[in-house]
Amino acid sequence: MKQKKRKIKYAAIFFLCWFAFLVFLVDGVLKFQTLVDFVGSYALVELILLLLVIVPTWVVYRFTKV
Image 1 (spheres, helix red, strand yellow):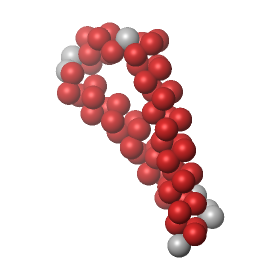
Image 2: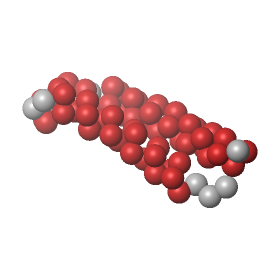
Image 3: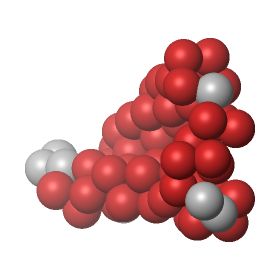
Image 4: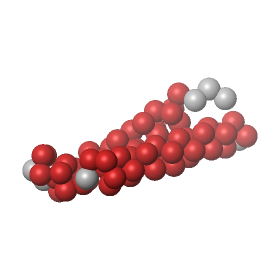
């Protein structure tokens, strides 16, 4: 049980840091509207950004050896 809590803790820390970095990148550097204009669909940009947060977090959780 303690190992599972540790895995969740590492994945949560990664999630928060990665999410903050993507928010800074998308809102500050790349500008969200520029991404929407480039891709052509608001929903597709949202889906891509959501997957860019969830998939790496799941990978960190899955492969953390504790």
